Image 1 (tube, helix red, strand yellow):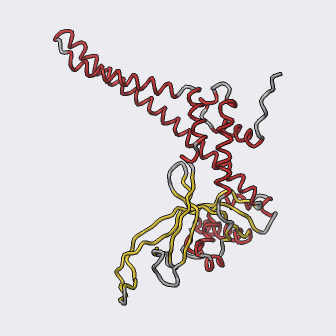
Image 2: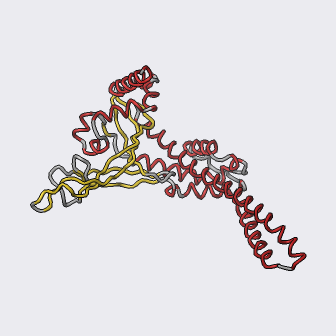
Image 3: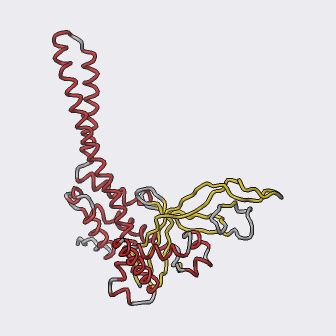
Length: 324
């Protein structure tokens, strides 16, 4: 007569299990977690899959693409910087040390880099006059990192989806930790207020000065109320409700936006209707995560042999530095 509820989708169930591993232990103390979280987890998982699915690329990154692709040229100051990034990448080094790296001659990864701008004075033509003191904004990128390298692009995408979901959970755990810190701050403030109020109470018994005592008592009452509200938020049941609400709105902590610039070969930013023949349009996805920093993100394709040579060169440089 009564039908049991349909089992959740295997991908959603796997995501729920991972979330329960990552989440603050206090949440796991709440009863009937699956009932309260399954729909929210399904929504967050679909959102992460969509974010990863919209990543541009894969773009080849090598010396040839540095010359031909305006975006790759903007990402790196020189072709040698590509090799240095590969050589310094711990993720690439670990990947090349595994047998799976030999499945193909190329592998894929997510490239992330921070977008930056600086102002400088340079040469520009204004009317018929060429001036060398024109303020210019220059676009460049730093803090390059390669994430989840693998020979199978689909595997890279799947792992990036899990990373996005884990990033959401780190954001939520930070929220829980902030609630705990607020609680400790309130407790400390209450202790201070009690220490101040007690002498006034003793003093008022002898001299009848109630005003300061009333002032501290009111403030103490406000602190007590705030502490009770904070404590209510930290109960397992309320934490689960907060987590479900958070997972239903993942874009508040994880989102992407499309960026477009017009730059020349030196990285100088121009208006769309200005600049010479060497000005080209570049567009890319910018990823904003829990720390609110903005990163260019794109899938890239890398030659395994070029990566291997870059790693060996970096290891040789480190060995020479140690000897010196």
